[in-house]
Amino acid sequence: MASAPENEKNASAPEKKTLTLKSMINNEEFVVDEHVALQSVTIKNMVDSDCAGDVIPVPTISGEILALVIEYCKNHANPSASEDDLKKADAGIVAKDIYTLIDLVLAANFLDIKGLLEVTSQKIADSIKDLPHQDVREIFGVENDYTPEEEAAVRAEHDWAFEGFP
Amino acid sequence: MVHKKRDGYNFEDGRTSKWCWSYLPVGVLGMIMGRLSPVDQIRFRAVCKDWRLASSSSQPSPRLPWLMTRDWVWSESGDIVSSNKFHMPFHRHTHTSMHELDGQNWDDIHGASVCTSKYGWLLLQKSKNGFVYNPFTREMLKLPKIDIAFNRITFSSVPTSTDCLFFAIESSKKSSRYKIKICICSLGAQKWTTKNFNGIGKVAEDVVYNNGIFYCVFSGGVLGTYNVALQDWKVLTGMAPITDVVFWHRTQMVDADGELLLVGTTLVSGVLNCILGIHRTAWKNSGSNPLNFRLDSVEGEPVNVEGLDTLLVFVRDSILLSCNWVTWLSCIIRDSIAVHRVSNFPV
Image (cartoon, rainbow over the protein chains, first blue to last red):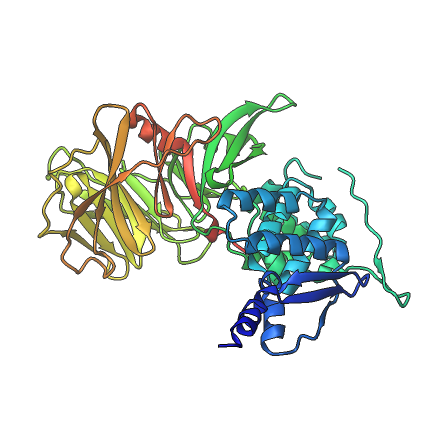
């Protein structure tokens, strides 16, 4: 059984396997444990189908946002974290301005991380809920594609809901 | 609140990307929309067409009941206006809407009691005048004068639709010598059509419409059905009366997706608790099945609504109301509170 030590070494190796995620926005690289990164269904699919090279390029997600995503995945990959701990940690991650949250929700959507998508959507909803719809347009950079008549008609359908709003 | 539009990111090769949020994936938009209160969802339909689409496709809580309370307040100009408050207990959200009424409408609506509420519409009655009122769109449609002293009145579908039928029933508890009178009309009709049937000496306690049939529950749990197409009235026999429980006031009937529930309030262990007795019936097949009443007790789930001193009791998608100290007040509460289902909103 001379090869036993070598086997042990091999057995422990997968646990330490890491992946490198690279933001294609600003070329920032993050080295993360594989099991942490695999919470992203998108990355998991890439790894499973052998499409992932040494460095996984992540388009349209900045390093700043990618760091938040990785923080979320690390927290949720920790088996000893209690539900309360996770709730608190999630709240910390989404305690950001609305623009960061929009980036984050898009990242969660692209990387297909259900929990992060949910918690970020909730935070965005909480942040915009009492705003006039014109402000929401501004925040999301949405172009108003209604004609003035169409917009008036949409409002008129439920005029009561707009009371107290411009 | 001031929001600054942020600059786009700079790519290495000098390109600048401006995020184009109008293309926020519909799925993501739907997730955000689904977490907003129904009122905000309705408002944000005005953002752009994509948002409108997302609001129609997201289904936040289709079972969410709306609670409306009505009040009269002085407006800034010194007029009395109707103040409608819409409560969404699960969203901890209250939306107040002021409705300034002109002379005739004010005369009609002031002091009128709410007989029933469906599809976001209220059926109001003031002496012999009946009308339907939509507190959201503020449409008001008048019904012909009604000549019977009806116990209960209801309607079959959205009042503005052509197939909507209004149905009123009068039944006296004094003696079975008194006929049961049923009045039917559609919107725009000049008068009600009245039909007389053999009396049963019981008061009609509630009436609901389901799939071509108006179901009527009388005191003691006696059931009658009126088949619209056949113009046929039947009192269903072969059914044990409810004797094992005393309801404190009129029972109410609730249509829970085709299954009709009979709900009455009873008291247990003193005045402070109230429970609901539910008689679940097998009415799905137009009442032709043998009727087996089963009494279920449902604990009232207290839900606090700001400014309302009531205990709300939810039964599935329906809301039933009771006061936490005197249950007999529920008749009064019923007069001022209406139930709306979000799923019934026109998209």
